[in-house]
Image (cartoon, rainbow, N blue to C red; front, top):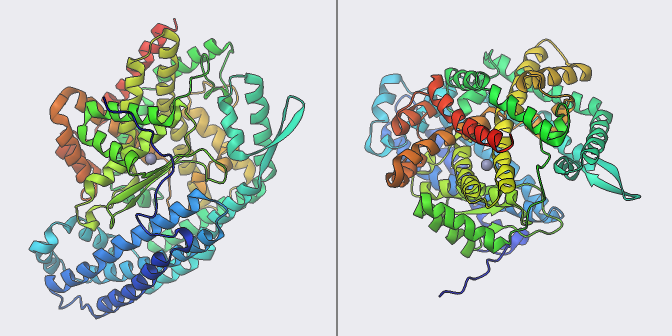
Length: 596
Ligand SMILES: [Zn+2]
């Protein structure tokens, strides 16, 4: 029998560029790409929309594609360097460098898109029918259509340039202030300092007093800095609204929907299905309150564990469990995971100086991915690892597509990851050996639903209402608190005792300038993957190839077309969404029976 080998918990970045933040080959690549960027820029300048042929465009695309691929490798590599060691000052310099490069690349692409916009409709229709362009017609036409909705190029360039210090800077200032915040917690007569992230992890402590006390301390600390965050949030929102106004865009959802390639009808159908199916989730929260011995849950109780603490699972054991469960659904997914563990594509070591959180990043030129997380042996670590491997697999099946078709939006990006997570969660529930274990695992699964249907719903409601009020001027801190509590009450159906008024400050997603409405795509991804999961269970063995075909199409069509083509469903109608939610409700029913 083959000896089980231990997997190494640190990643190997030298396969991408050697030498880390002092890499010579990285430096050379950056200067080579900078030169190539100027060359493409010149070709675009020469491109004459009135006379251009399909061949002229192909020529530019052939220059642009490899450049974009290599740049993405560079950005991803720098991202990995800064995550693995927050004190690496050379990496910090490279991060700034990649910001410049990406702004430059953005300008080059916008210039091309503006030229595409000027091509006459008839000529365009013919052009994208050509052999070389047909395959990437969707992304080209999308870019062209978007360019039509923008201001003239010189104005857009000016906005981009001013945004570096006038818009994105608010996001950076947010990060800086949060980085300097901490709470002091008294533990066994000793006072200990915790970062805001560490402190919020204590919301999963089994002692309610600890949770409540820490929650209050956290609230005080956010409240103390609320005037600063109120300013920064209002200003970044103000900037965004000004840009929209000048472009003639009235609806704040226009950009996020466009980014996610989805229709308003789809978003509405999704939320409607959720709103109409909240009753079982309310019943679950009330049951959890009973099990915890309180009349009503508060925000700080939602993450409280039921039952005893979990046993630790070693990294290699966790890895093997993931490979084994993936195997049942898709041997190709299992092979991919195994290869990622063996080739050290994963940074999982539990050590100081690493950035918190997890991510998966792609190197389309090298056709590799890297996963970043901190593994300490908990069930939720295994879930994270599976989640990130899901992202990695998604990229893996797209490696051979044209780079233009490898760009997919956040809502479908979160589909492959959630799907992978679900495979593990389901298997864990099935294999539970005691009633207590089963209850705890089911609770964990249902809590995910609570996050997507209630917590993220509240974020969406808050953000929508905040932006509406912001159109008429600055929204004061007291009003932000009020808007947040109102949104939470609606989203949680008034089930909770204490809410979290400072959530508009503590949730960094509201302060992310790169992506407006960093919320509903998560819920979409979760429900969409539940729908695929239900489909997979029906399909059995035929499923693997269908799933891969669906993933491969995520970068070249709208979500409505994707669902129609691969699942034969209409996302603008509530049926699909309801069916997906019902998978969650089945878990709740089982949970309710077991805890009767
Ligand atoms: Zn993810």
